[in-house]
Length: 482
Image 1: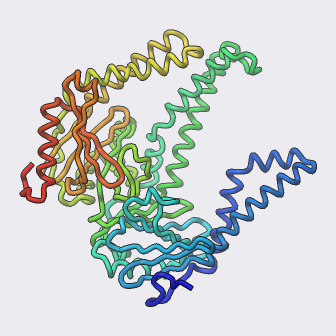
Image 2: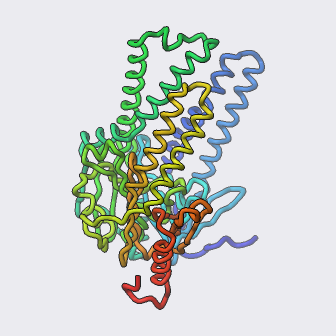
Image 3: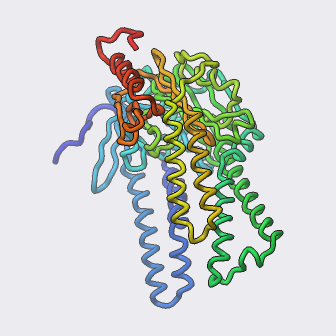
């Protein structure tokens, strides 16, 4: 019989016995939440076929429960020779080894069931976890609070980047309930709800076969009432989601790490070493800017950049606009751009190009929906695309310093990325046919998990920026070469 990897050394530890029940309850709830329409159809249908379908559903539920039981019985972990070893599986065995120096962040999650049992779920993420099932390299669900903290301390002893303790530190911010509610109001889903209601009302008039009164038959007051109810519902959902996620939010610095904690029913704490911070993003939708706030998002190589489709790790929901620069420096202490520094704009021709393509995109959408929209709506959408494209391009900006790259995009939803140049893995100079016709080019920076593109620049200027970044990436480059 072949010996198992890591057979000797430190003893293996298992999950807490109460974790079996704690994990079974959410698993059953997730299964019912996904399959309730099928379960309802089986129950209402009745008869022999309904019983057969119900038995199949229960068998599926039983298989899911069996996987949870097998996970509890087979998962073992230990720290051996300075590295975390995790093994699991009954038929298909899996052995994972995680170097503490490669850990990007650690997250402690406590839902209602965890709190009742005094347990916590520990999630350990490394670079590139998005390609792994579940997105988490090391998932231990669930441990006692003592075991989780003991494991964190043990990993901290073997890495200068992993915090050994988060109990004490410098408090930075703790947004109150009013600010959390304001965050929910400014999320921006209300506009989508209003647009959907507009399409619905128009469709009611175009499709009388549905048996629903057309907007003209409803009357102006009824239509207005329906829209107001939809808007109120959109606000309620956004505010409720914000409270569930960010209630009691606080973040602080302890040693060489930042710690973020929040949540009403499910409490989450994210621990991010300062050395592992890959970029900081400041997002400020237009309503949030009117309120005088922005949102701070801290990311490591465990999540991606624009287009990677990954969730952000450390989030500060509301930061006063005048405090944003100082809060960025808490995350990136070497951040060397002055708070009043004006970013460089994109090329003038890029503004015209953005307006044209904005109008073109909305023209295509309006053409596809012309059966439900009047001609005035079509031209209105085209004008909307041109104006928003123009404003988005006008608000774009960038800056390249010796240590950082700063990129800003968007008008309605404005995002600013602050990327340390040391995190850049490769750089690309790109030029599409339409950009070539306008003498424009784009510089794209690649880092683990995604890429970040600078605004469109004149081709010659983009070439200069590209060559400056490449020169600084050279092993022989001296500080300040760019």
